[in-house]
Image 1 (cartoon, rainbow, N blue to C red):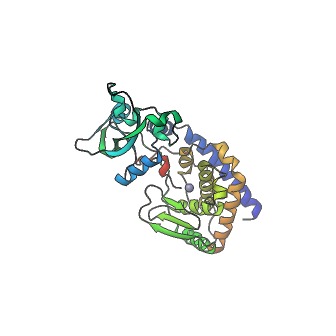
Image 2 (cartoon, rainbow, N blue to C red):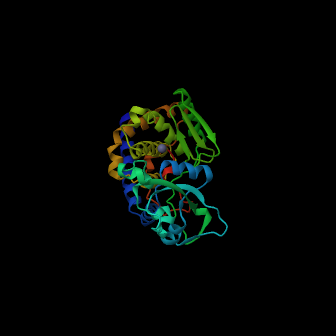
Image 3 (cartoon, helix red, strand yellow):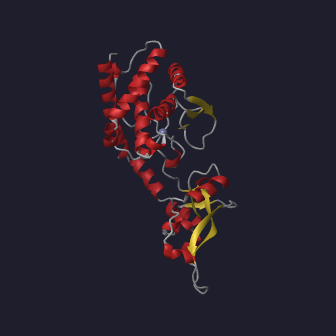
Length: 316
Ligand SMILES: [Zn+2]
C-alpha cells in the first residue's frame, strides 16, 4: 500500500471510530452504567489508599446506608467493613449526631473528597473512623453491567513484530498475571501487560510510549481523556489495518466520555503514530491480506457480560 492510500485508509478508520463512539455514548447500557457510577462517592486519595491496603480486590465501595438506599443492596451478615477516615466538625456535646453522619457517603461536605479545607473550618475539624463495604460484601438488586471495553483477540505474528519494534525503540515489555484492574500499563520505557490481554492492549501501550505520554512536559499539557483517545484510536487503526478486530474501542472511549469530535480532533497525531507502527511492523511481517478492501464499520454491539469496573481501573 502506498503512503497516500495508507493515509486515506487511516483517515476513514478514524472517522468510522468517531461515529461508533458517538453511538456507544448514547446507548442505554452506557447511560445506566455512568448513572450508577455517579451515585458512588469519590473518596480522597488517602481513603483510596486505606481501602486498597485493606481490600486490594475492592471494585465498588460505599457505606452501609448508601448500599441500602441508592442501590437496594444489603451488606451480608458477618462482613467486616473497610475502615476509612471521615471528616467531621466539633459541635456542642448536647447536640446529637444525625443518622446521616454515620454514613460518610451521605455527607455532602466537599472535605470528604478533597484535602483542601476551608480555613475557617480548621479549628473545628477532626476525623473519625467509619466503615464502608465493597460490592462483593453486599447482595440485592444487580448493578448495571459495564460495557465491554477489553479485547482479548491475539495475533501472534503481529505481536512478535510489535515486540521487535518495541525492542528497537528501547521499550521493555513484560507480561504479568495481575495489574490491579488495568489490562496494561506504560511507564516511560516499560510496558506491563496481563497474560490474558489481547494484541490491541500491546498496541495501545506502545502508542502511549510513542506519544511520550509519561513525560512530564507532555503529561502536564494533556488530559487523561486525550491521552486515552490518542492511544486507543491508534490501537484501533493499527489493529484494523492488520485485520484484527478492535470491537471494544468505541466502548472504551465512551467510558472515558470521549466524543466523536474529540477523536477527530486527534486525527493528525493518531495518524502519525499509526503510520509509524504500521510501517515498522510491515518490515517484520510477511505480506498479508489487508483489511481495507473489505472494510466494514463495526457497529457498537450489545454489551457482553463483564464485571463492573471503576473508570480509574481502565487500561492506562
Ligand atoms: Zn491507556
